[in-house]
Length: 149
Length: 288
Image (cartoon, rainbow over all chains, first blue to last red; front, side):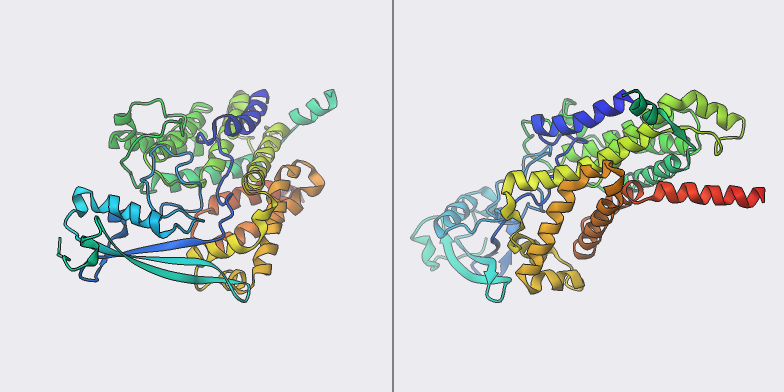
């Protein structure tokens, strides 16, 4: 009986002191309150969509705090639920990805940021869609040197 | 104080405890057959499970997964057949904890779908350990169903845990986002992204922010009040609220909280009383 009491106390103390250490949890799912989110799509020089994972633009967030109470650090993706990154942040991230060995073959990519948030009529929907052509340097970003990887 | 301790020690026949055990063993069966996505990457600095101290290679070893699965099957089968008590309970509980821990250690996306069952397995194992001689004797003499073997503290510890689990969920929301969590927009965004397009609850949430906000307020109230389920007068109401909440979540999203809703319903709805009444009626019918 006292062991059961200690277990209940541990279920209060451990999540407060150490965070989620399975099987102890503070049940943190959906504890955030996002007011917007973005979908990112990446297109190659030929206009064809590219896997967003390749440019770390995919979504890791699944309602749980990203990287909380898990053993593996999640990749540093651009998508951050609740945040609509500005153009500069998107360009910086994509430039870093274009510099990786896997993506070095692309002269440039087009990145589409679809922002979802509150719209008229007390609903949510697409607020705006921005599309940027991004290359490692300004000269290549003209798109004239576009080439297939 | 003495009266309270006496109340905690008072025993009833074991049908409710056995129903909980079977539900937990069913969840173990689900866990055994669950495929896991193993992710590579940098290790988190902070422990995320009770197995975080194990070497990296062990956590990623397929042998470790199969060993846990095998032990879970062996332990679960023995416990279901009431053999090797209380060792079979602890074997089941340890293998269950280890198997899901291996998953949590090797991923960056997890879900809180086994925490509740896992903790309740510990509580049920404590029960079997405390009562093992009496249970074994009752089984041997064929009077298991008629012997008071389930102390009140076991049921109350389960109720307290289920309540605490939901209170933690409510307090987490208030702590990290404040009362503004329930402004309707966040629920609409989650539903917009992940809600089943065919679900009436998806249409309802997306149709008007005020409805979404009302549902979030209700969620916040019912989750935070979870621990009040320890008060017998409020238990059924909290149980109904939480079951309705899970119903909405399961209808709208693809989140796998079926085990949680089942266990919440078992503990917070008057299932124990219904079982006991059913048993009495059956006894009377046999005697009559």
